[in-house]
Length: 261
Image (cartoon, rainbow, N blue to C red; front, side):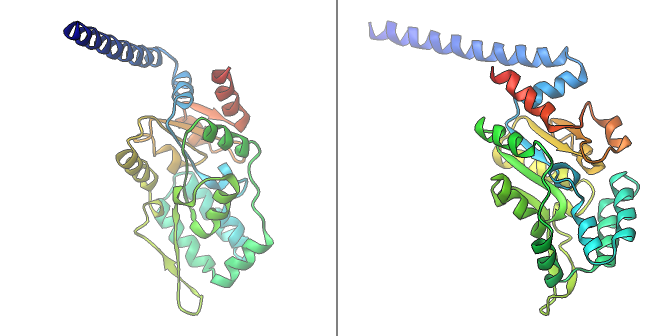
């Protein structure tokens, strides 16, 4: 009887493994016969990690542009931002040029944070909440500055440890001293490097990157899918490269809610 019980257990184990493998194969097959947009939508529905850009995606503004305006350097920096997001120069080149113009001090950054509250993009709070309810970790992967991004993460209930952003450096007197060029998000291709590290560290299998810029589009691969976002600004190059392009986070919320029913 004991031997027979072991045989039954062994057979059931094989059956369960076969069923699991079959379902996984069917899921992959279903994705393979979908359109490009449907494939990304299915990946989003089943994602085990979602990464968002921040400027002009999670928030309505470009943080560096707003900081530059506050420091009296708005027009010069806005032009460089447009060129960088359009893919006309490397991100690190654009970042250095813009910061060399602004040269923000610690005092200026503190005053900026106090006087200009964050403007979240409509729908982002609900979308992040839904992802968290489904047990999907959310990361902010951005070329913006950590000192400006962490308050956004806190407002959305995202752990600050899930923020990948650039770090400004200052002299002992609080004057601008540069930025940390070792941060992967300080250069072109850096967002892809962050996603690759997340896969290695956490074994995520389906990572989605959502953003409005060229640096977001180029992060897929290694991201398994890219969703272009044009709710705040439409960039033609990004729109062309995105298999799924949305202008309202409600579109993503609807996709998650359809699956939940």
